[in-house]
Amino acid sequence: MEPIRLKVILSAVIISSGAFMVLVVGAGASATAYQAQGLAIDFGEGDVVWTDADLHNINDPVELLMFACAENGFSCDISGDTVTEIDGVASNTEREWDFWVIDKGETEWRKVAPPYDLDMMGHTSYVWAYCGVSERPAVGADQAGNSIFGYARPQRAVSLAPSITEILGSLNAVSVLVGTDKYSNYPRSVTEGQQRGDIKIIGDWQNPSYELIMGTNPDMVFCDGSQYSHYEMSERLRRSDVPTVVLYSGESIETILNNIYIIGRTLQYDLRAQSVKEMLNGAQEEIITKLMSGNTKPVDTMISLSPDKSPWVSGRYTYVDDIMGAAFGRNAMPDSFYGWVHATSSIISSSNPSVIIIFTYDYQPTESEYNEMLSTLSGEWKYTDAYKNGQIYMFCDDLAEMASRPGPRYAQLMELIAMILHPDVFSTSVPKYIGNDYVSYLTITDSLGFNV
Image 1 (cartoon, one colour):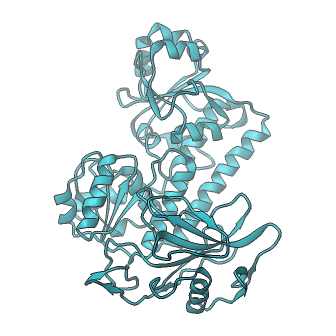
Image 2 (cartoon, rainbow, N blue to C red):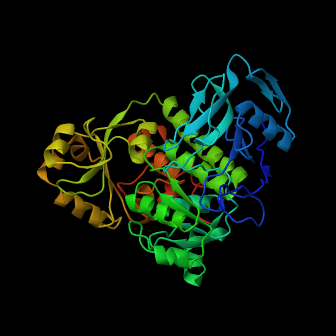
Image 3 (cartoon, rainbow, N blue to C red):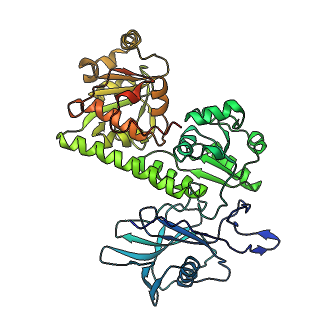
């Protein structure tokens, strides 16, 4: 892989009708809430270079690329509208350079074929990307459709969700945090900062306080795209010239990795973000390789948020469903279940999961409380193969908390679920009830807690 390129080029401040129209980036610069102007060059594998440019004066994608290459000292081979090489990376039969845009109000890249006839002020982001036929450029917009490029490096950041705080922790970026929601309690450096008063509590996850956020004097606020209140807060903060990034809802492993990339890009912690992603991908590959070596088959599984008669269960498009699938599990719930669904008791018995995993704060991870939990199960639960074969597991305390957060510890959750579903493949067995000591059962991902 090519080395990560971290050059950030200072742009001129463009003033139109008395308002700043771009972000000024670089040491000591102050960011506004407006979109950046410029170009990303994506060499693949997270190696993305951003260059500020005045799009009022450069209105052609090839001219824009030539400007960006000149600013960064890159070579560039162009024939007409076809780009064949950038900084020694040449198009070939498998991958080639193409121009992509993100349209206003959208979040996905759209490839644009020559001849180029574009309004260069009419889109959110622009990139020349080195991609294969089935590949797309690295994420270029947040879930609210704002460009992730061009922000000044934040010195005073606020996180509105525990999963976001954990990503910041994994990037060794807790030092920039001045505010979190009240449920952010991991890694330990966050709680230590809260206790010292260096990190303020700005409200709860669903209802953050605008006044408390503004009281921290932030230069970046990270919002959770799964909460509508965070969209509203993002818009309000941007109207107050506070830059915000709305992270993607954590419905898959891919979105977690995208969020790590986005925060790394915004903080200019690109190298650390790439390192964290590589560690997580490596652990996931090791778990899957281990599962494949045992000729394993998918196991019908139900993941529930309680042992209630009609509990909330994981359907499709949740990150635990994605993890379950990666761990060679098969969601036992109906295909029509999307997100977290309130399942009726009859659905549980008719779905007949072979394994049930319960995330609960109501029980302690002890034999007596586990047996008490089993005794409270409704008759419909007891019809399942999971109950009959003693395959009901209880995640408590810190583990229940970790399992409910779509953050960088997902690899640890994947290993635990894989160990439960396929015990013959692993040398360590998992008890029916697990709590704060869950790391002691891990062998592949034990060092991926990022608890510093």
